[in-house]
Amino acid sequence: MKKLILPVLAVMAMGTASAQFNLGISAGYGIGTPGQVLGTENVINGSSIVTSSKNIYGTLGNGVHVNLTPGYMLGDHFGLELGLNGFFGSKTTVSEIEGPLGKSTYTQSSSQFRITPALFIQSGGEKISVYARAGLLLPLLGSVKTDVSSNLNPSAEVDRESKTQGKVSLGYTGAVGLNVHFGKKFGIFAEVGANSLQVKSKTTKVTKYTVGGVDQLVTEYNKKVNYVDEINSSSNTGANADPNKPQEQLRQIANFSSFFLQVGIKITFGED
Image (cartoon, rainbow, N blue to C red; front, side, top):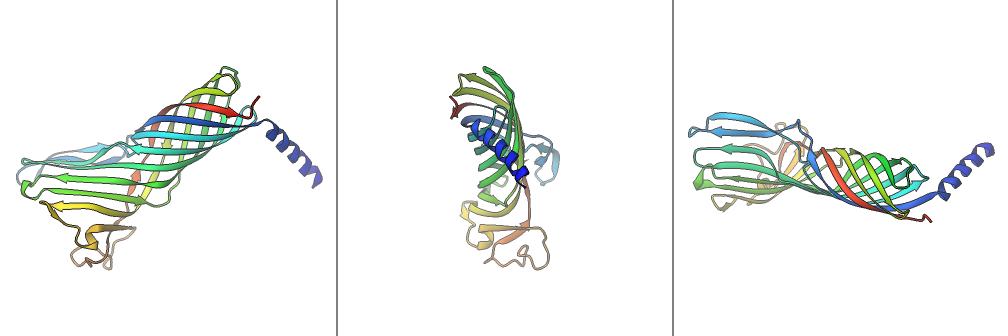
């Protein structure tokens, strides 16, 4: 046992001796990965018959990223990071209907606070180095805001706003980048990467719902939605639903996957 412990302690000691802390501050923009059908864009006639229809592709991953990233280098080439990531999503059109008297639009946007624990590997180089990192993407806080606005019937315009909370989810992130060093303490970097994240819906709280200017938030059924994996005869939905209880709907999945580009600065501590 001693023969095993002593070499391990020696390796840890060497790693600690060369270890250094660093702090990265960066910002960038993500473009939602295409390929998923979010909804449809339809045109209807006066009899509500669809005369044309096409899919809307995309994700909710479009938006600004702001990052604060503490890191710990265990030598010249290998380290650990714990990214603190704020995501501010752009408004995305999910569905649209155009009729002879007006239009109905369904849009969504999201804001999240995430942590991104990751492994970090970099090349040598006093002036310039390249690096790669890979890790997990864990949203801790956030919601999806949904806005529905319809004047298809001008005498009964619909205005609905809601926020959806998701279940605990696990995603993945990775990037490759370039460091430019200005001495041993300061540098700038630029990177391209990708996030893979899907979040299952948990609950929706409706914050505004009017039809023809009349408030519809008079029952619990219209104020809150609980998402479930199965709807049956005992579910609180449909014509026989209890208005004093939240309605139930089948669970949905929001896709936040994206490609991103970001730039930032990095400050190194503990290096002479």
